[in-house]
Each structure stands twice: as C-alpha cells, then as structure tokens.
Length: 311
Image 1 (cartoon, rainbow, N blue to C red):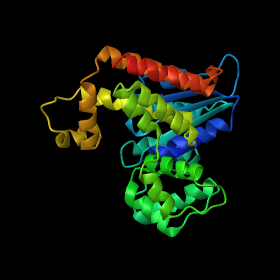
Image 2: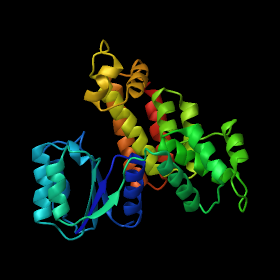
Image 3: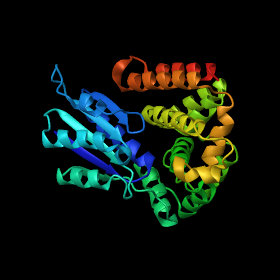
Image 4: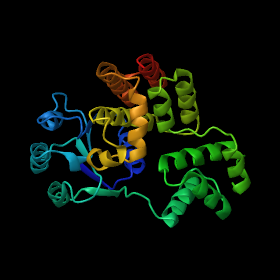
C-alpha cells in the first residue's frame, strides 16, 4: 500500500501533487472524494477490495472536515491496508482534525508540504521556482513586477508565469519589460478564469479562457478542480441568508468576504436544479480527463457548454 499525506492550505500545490501522483501511475483506477460531499460509508466502499485486483489511487481531500465516523473509516483501512491501493489524504492544516492527522502520521506516510505562501520572500521564491521549472531565466526586477501586480493568488501567478514563458522567445531572459507588456493586454488564464466565465454564463469567453489555459500549460485536472470548487462555493453561499453581511458569514462559511459577494452575484442566475446539473457535468469531465474518454479536451468543452446552457 502507498500512503501520501498532503499537508497545508495551498490548493494549487495540493492539486499539483495529486496530479503528479496520478500521472506517475497511468494504469491505476482513480477515485477522488471531497469531505464536503461524501457520506458515512462512502470511504469504506471506495477502499473495499477490488474484484479485478487493479492498482488504485484513492484521493480524499480536506480530511480535516471529515466527521468522526468517516475518520474511523480511514483508520480502519490503515490498520488493515490492501496491496495495490495508494491512499492520498489532504489535510489543510490547523487543529481541526488533528486527532485523525496524528493517527495517519503513525502509519508513516510520505508527507508533501502544501503550506500557504504568505510572505513576499516566499512568493518571490515561488516565482523563481516556477520559471526554473519551465526552463526559463528571470530577472530580479521581473520577479518584483509580478509580485507587485499579482499579489497573493498563486493560481493567477502560476498562469501568468506560464504565459510569459510561452510568449517570450526561448533563450531570452524574462525581464520587467516583458512583464509590463504582459500586463498591458496579454491574456492570462487559469482554471479559475474558466470557472468564473462559465458560472457567469459567458460561453464564448469560457471556451476562449479554456483554450488559453490549456495552451499556457494549465493541467486539465486543475480546470475541473476550479470548476468544482466554484460550484461548491455557490452551494455554500446559496444556503446562507442574504440579509447577513458577507463579512459576518466569512468565518462560518470558511470563505473570504469578496468570494461570498461574487457568489451572491452569480447565484442570481442559478437554481438548486441547475447547480446539481452542473455538478454532474463537471464530475463527468473529471472522469473523462482521467482516462474515461478518448478526447479529454472535448469533454471539458462539453462540460462548459452544459454549464453555460443552465445559467
């Protein structure tokens, strides 16, 4: 059995780690579960011995939010692991779910740090590491320009870096002039840009954003993750009273006020039925890009068309 623990609140890093684990086992059957969506017994069912004996990767996200019974399902499996199963668990950090986390650590998992990047020095290191990953050189002034213009959104920063690496000629160092040109009108696209356009019902813009995201190196897994995350946000906010200010809701919903305000604007066009239909479309696209379809890009386009038709 393989056991990997992702620890930290930066979803971009967690999604990348999950995508890498999946890509390293192309023949494995993939199951991804989110603690906000599962029910008691579902983890046990996912981890139950397979009739066909194939290798499997089971991903459970945000385990700090599992209820006690669901946490026990994880522990029961760790006490009696099965060969051929790689269990990947993501804990966002903090004291919530610490008892479960401590038990998981006793099983000696491979631990991957996914800590939120908050300090400017850490963000600068992230920018340099991203350019290095893409095989590009960047000046100190360009790093600072990106930091000044993009702030703390790691996904947006990663998308900008990918596009700069694509736009600037190979062999040429990326400097602050290139960053300035990029900011003056070049399209920067992440999975969340795709999700925002789709949930606003802007089909043409969403499809264009999808193409730009894929062309600049965004993993399709990150796009379905962004779509699913945005739909979860809508579902969370839809259940809250509109008479309560977003600032007062932030703590209970676990969302920043600006995100609650944006979701409220989007929810004007949504109903529970259309939300449910969109969730099904994204789930199908997620399965497709992980091997269920010949053309995963077409599956993503079909999901966006389905979603925007419901708005």
